[in-house]
Image (cartoon, rainbow, N blue to C red):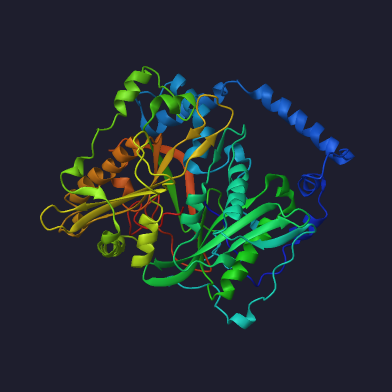
Length: 545
């Protein structure tokens, strides 16, 4: 769920001029929607013919095996770097290679084969922005790249859009507009080559993600077709207070950059980025954080996705995972089976309530000092993040969920002292499974924030005390997710996650998530790789929705 932010002062990128001269047949298809049938243009016929040829070529490739040369190269590399590895045979490697693209969508939030990736602008555009570049010395001191400026010096008028389009501030409170946004994201945000999976953002999820305390409706920027008011593009910002090492930065969290796939040639991304930047600048905000699966100038850190299999038969059916050689589905089910009840239930594990907000906020603030880049949360923000998305009414007996539930948050309350010693949370982001009769939805849970006061004990890391506690805590979150009928539980190599992922049977995914800071310079932060002074994961304490 990630997009990019750009500054207000930059001149119009030259590719925006090209956009106005691009072929208009696909634009016409959108702008005339609902106007009745019409004769296709010659250009449109040519495009359909071209697409037909491409479709035939793709169909010819379907079902073909991974080339033997590729399999041999992988086996050679494994042998060279790791020696004899159990299970590293030709059949297993071939099966793994065939699953890589599907796993990219589910774990890495990136379009398969590069198709329909979130439009991130281009590097020519980013070369004009106040972001670090790979050939630059980031220096020893953290700080802004360009200074802030007074409101009157910020551009007052919206940036010009290509012909036939107009700006629209999206009102998240309006059910009609939130439905429009849901439909745009669900159909265009991320999709694989065969249109097999699409992220499904519910109205409850979007309200939770886009309406934190102090949010600005002007930062929910849409583009509509002027003639029929159809929503065809969107980008969002929400306020966030970041601590980056020893500096507190008031910034915006930029997300959900999405453009209708039939309008990608119009190159709306840079204009959207500049417009949301202008809106942020008008509120006195000149820094931002954003993420992307693609590499832009220049990541401050990179984390890898891990996943924990829960519903083995379903994941095999939809080709999310496969049955390894010398393994059966029955054995896989036994391997990934979880306990029936959480292990910390006797220690006081229960669902978080409003009365816990103050204690959780204090525990969160203290625990997050372990990491270099973290969001600072007020009690109001803690309440929003962990409780506002808990859903309505009582849990359904069949699904273990409330109506409209987005986030699950639990605390451990000491039975005698009644002190909150731990908390754990995760959220739901499902994907629609296209073209499947048996399975319509892939239910994915994502590890959110957690904390434990075990971290404050002497030698908690060195003696393995914290690792053990986090295994219990996150292990119970996996059990709760299984009871709530999730199919897979995902996590990133940030915070203290690397210490327990393998022990809890999380498998390494193929997706990488790059973290970026706009108009802020700092040395690289430890993510999937350590830095000179920090181990894996300890640099990043931000979970982007």
